Image 1 (cartoon, rainbow, N blue to C red):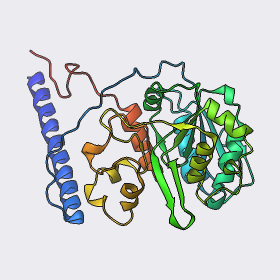
Image 2 (image 1 turned 180 degrees about the vertical axis):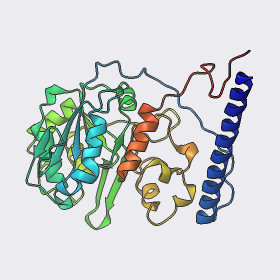
Image 3 (image 1 turned 120 degrees about the vertical axis):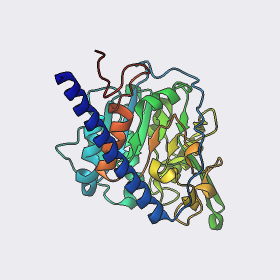
Length: 326
């Protein structure tokens, strides 16, 4: 009799929970539909890219340089630093330096400089790259304080490239200035770009004006592209086996929306991308390396939870509300 009551109680709890979740989902879906005034989305296919190389085996050494400023130490950088120092695998970029004009107790390894504003980014990045030892790592990643990094996918990608050669990797874009007859292929700075150790060594030693202040343009990432081209550093194709970008300039909740693709605030991406770029879930790689513009700390922690902390049980491992026989 006790077991029947217990079973009845658990069944009732299950039905109550299921009803509550259903109500919440219906409310969320209804709210989203009313807000966007969009028709029901068609069924999507999620193509999987082939894994050409195994995930990083621990032999690849990466140093990360994160650009930040005192105005974003509290709302961005320290949250990013907390996650990147997490001792649980996969720890994003275990060796990280923050490039800033001031120190902060929650930020380890700050490379200080006098460059403060957005217009000083080129100088801040140059200062940071010239402060590191090229022999201390195989690769050097430059990212922003609102860049979310999937470190195992970065290692997976880098396994396809030779770190002993001068290389420049990232999301390839093309900058054009018709008035100056200027065309520069560069890598998106927000999505993060990677320099091999030999490329950093060349940057540190060169006297070429393209690799010094003030730079060809007011954009740090465009200037880096011009510098690498002047040094003869080659670029690499970082797309997955299905041709989808892996360094992404927006968070996933933006890129899955096909309706934003041609909106004024996002149309630049198709116009300036070296390779075709499309919005929509089916165009997002399952081997993504980074997302940019993750600016709310809650979004950052949510992505960290979903990509690192949440563990999906293997098939047959058990299910909730399963009652024993008898």
